[in-house]
Length: 585
Image (spheres, helix red, strand yellow):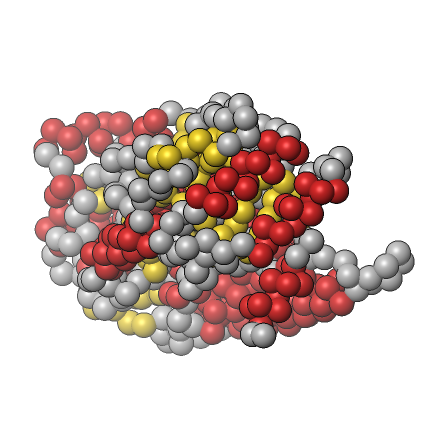
């Protein structure tokens, strides 16, 4: 006998579900359903449908069979009179973008049609199809109703298709032809959408409880973050609900809709706009068998891709480990369950503790390295301050044009890209104004709303540059519809860093994308100086405003400098600041 035959014989008698109270003769007949084999071209053969109906009628409960594509009965289940529970199934074959390779056939004692629970099982388990054998009042198999996942684009259908009922004695549906056409269509959809790129594909999910305008802006930003991480967005799904589902964050019906969309688009990644707790990640992953990340983890992944300096890599790795630590138990079944008896720690618990200890040791090691980096940065800053050059730090929302403005002002070639978090590592350049004033201009990492606390803490060494700044140049993308929200987000971060009392000059960037009337309204509303970082001609008012502020700072600090009796020599260019060209407008 081959392995599969031995396995089937071993499984005989392993009937799942509500078997208590069933007569021994009926129980034995139900056990023998494991020996039956259904012709592969039929969903359920007339003989098997007849026996299932009779056994179900005698037991007074629903009976179900989980059948493989070759017609082998993989699982026999007994339920309640009006429902049946399907236990955990083995991991699906091939990949998450394919059907499971199993069909579920069960009885309905009152000749009722397929219900919502049946259709949810079809979707959540990604079954080939689900069929209900309608049992008449005499215990005969009357009709069979079949439903399958609809392979078309999401939105055109409810996600499934229910075929017209057909007589159990004369089935019309060719199962092999049906399943072949379904998988061909699903594969065609996946190839059509992935022909241009091999990037990861994801569905964005947002649970909205705020204004529609705010939700759209937040989801749009999440889409930009996904693109910055090199992820292709297949679809965006938003659910508005008054009360959040504590288990899945979203409703189970909407989760089924997401699974259908993932199957249709060949997606294996879900990105949530809201932060998920470890139990929610576990619940969604177990239910959908899809990879699940939230907005915070997406931002951390982007930072990990973009960090170039040793300092940046240390800070990002520390933030990732701190984010991972409380979620370590949900990564794998082997790490989250006790295997031993009372008072005994099993190998799963031991493995979990070992991994947690390693992460904590790694965090401590990175913290020591970051302390050394912070010390070196402090020494470089002290040398820079001894040169008594005023420092202007450019701050702003990510992708507002900070690095572009630095390049235009100092004739530099700092990397710029029209995407979120294009640059992470701080950059400093010397700049000489037309009035023969020399300053240091520093570009810092961009901010974003709800910046992850672990990331803000990890980047404290980088953001310490802002504490030594004499003036903060706040660059704003005035063409963005969320301009006001971006300004507020940056101000919130500056307040968290204790920098709200620093002198700030507002620069309204990307004025070239607005009409003159819109620019005038923006200046009247927010104040500041309108500019286009790509055009030196528009920077004259900004340069003049910066010179006025710097001169005022120099005058205010002159008495303090004169009072100090310093013998240190100055004038040499700081080692960590590249010399920029004199500004010519």
